[in-house]
Amino acid sequence: MKPVGLVFKPKTSFDVLKRELIPSFDSVLEDWLGNVKRTTFADPNYMLEITYVTPPFKAFVERIVERLDIPGVIGGPLERSFGFGKTHALIYLWHLFTSNIYKRSGISINVDVVRETLVLGMDCSKDRPLVRIIEELKAYTDMTHPIVRMKDPLLLRAVVEVLREYRRKLYSLSSEELAELISKIMEKYSELGGSPRLLLLIDELGWGFAQKIRSFTDKIREGKRSEADAIYNEANTIVNFLSYLYAKLYGKSVAGVVLWVLAEQDRKEIEALAIKNQDNETIYNKIKGLLNDLDVIAERYSRGLGGTGLAELSYSPEHALEIARYRILKTVEGISLAKLQDEYISWLEVIAKQLNLVEAFIHYKEEMKKYYPFSLGLINLLKKLMSARDVPATEFVRTVIMVASEASRKALHADPEGPCTIGVKHLNIPGTVQAKLMREFEADWADAAGDVELALSKIEPDKREAAETAAK
Image (cartoon, rainbow, N blue to C red; front, side, top):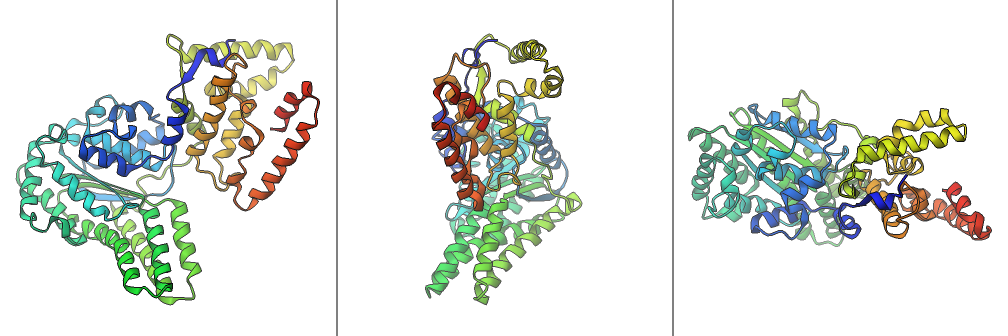
């Protein structure tokens, strides 16, 4: 069996991969508006190349595509990353409806749905995110922008005619007026003979709210009431916009999907801020009021789904491992992954027979084949990292990719002619323990890792590698 370093290579540089673990939707939108590529995620072809379409992800995207062909506005929050990452999902959807990658995506999507859908997006971690929507609408009126080659001319005409009505106050619209503007575009498009469809993607709603609420509480306690009110109103404007948009589109022949990201940890942070400020009734009521209002709005958007969520899909450690391998590694030219997997299993079977371990081999055979070149030890570690019960602060797929990429870096660069798999051997003790992800148990895990490292340093050199592998 050939060493892993001779048959695999990085799909992208490990430094680039590390930077890409936290993508920015706003950067993608900014690049789209300026027709420049300052982030690799702004390139639709690159996005298609690095996205491993798991069954849950495909089901999620196809459900959105399906809803864009049915009159009625639905939507809701993305709270959990189900095998691909919330921001990554929004960026993928953005490119799917603003470029021609839909033809090669493997997603079942009608060209008319792409051409007739008005796609808008914003990132609530930035100041005045609603302005971004105005800038995007103006791009639909720019005959030099690539989007005009993608969209139905009647949709473009509808945007031009409605924006003309608002040109004097375009950048000073209230949340209700912006919702009305979008509704009028849909109405105008219908009058012109089109089939109005809307896809609105909102990233970092929860994180943006958490930061604004934290700043709001600080200003209140500092006695800066007017500044505090201005900050709170920023957050409230977004909530109002979602509410007004639903009201303006309700009952009209518009197929719409509205998605916003409200991560579980962001909700917990906001709720924690409310608890911290229970002694101040004004602060507490405003925080709880904002969250409750958002929950009511989410329920409203879910009516068209029978009260269910648009993305009620579960975490899958198996999908996470497949995503990690797909993002990190590729076989060298001319070598098939399937062929390598078969060779690996045949090689292991021979060894298992020699060591009288056939029963154990049969038990783990399919798993080892499926996730090759990850070793069984690394597979088990990565599965642990997908469990919030075992690793309280896990970021799920992002954590799995981070740890697997670190092991792959060492295997391919420092040990290219060594083992035939990438394993825990290629991680140090702290990299295996991941103490920082253990929250209140971080100190205990860090101490334990330190004790193990100290004990290993005292073992005879010829026995140290075996002892370290056993410890991991």
